Image (cartoon, rainbow, N blue to C red):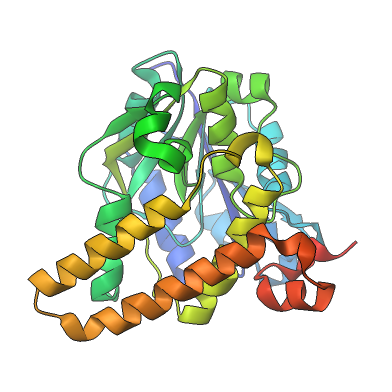
Length: 307
């Protein structure tokens, strides 16, 4: 592992105080980082003092209309000459100093592993239900997923999160990298291609970041609408691998958990949120049948629909 070069790539938009904390924690990792490449949307919102404070930063500015979940990350990947590229979001914080080391270890234990993603732990202000959702989606046990696991994990075989995920650059380039136009879900689209081509995706439970959101019902609707759109636009990855079963499993387990913890008053909220998630997802999957005004109301990424 000593000879492996690692770059960290972070898309940013109007980064706040927590961004400085993120960079600070990355510079103190046990595994050395070569560069931190920041793809910043709108230079007006960028704090130039960060570059003075952290010489490891390499910042590239773009306009809001130029940002794309897939293309922006793909452009950043072209700027990297590292063996391993770690993609993060600006609101994820390394939980300890071993994040990069543990991601690299998970990625390099098998030559067939093309991607490894981190465990996401809840923030201090995370809601009770969302804490359980985190534990469901990001358990404390690591796993390596291949095509053989599709009958077992279904859609979760393709699960990978660019909140914090590492990729082998040689495999990334061989497969063409992230799609150049993606409303959302560029990580799973690429992971799906990895799996289909006979590679593996590792979940590294010992590589931990702090990251969670307390989304409202409408935020869940908009987010899942875009998720549905991404799946509808990439049938080569998602056709025949339904997502609904995993969602139903989460709802049932969450309700059972709330009953066990004697917090049954939270159950109506779970049902309402789940309904909004499914309504958004179903609308997104069928977006081609919707009028443009309805699409623009449903999406959380209006820039994507501008021609």
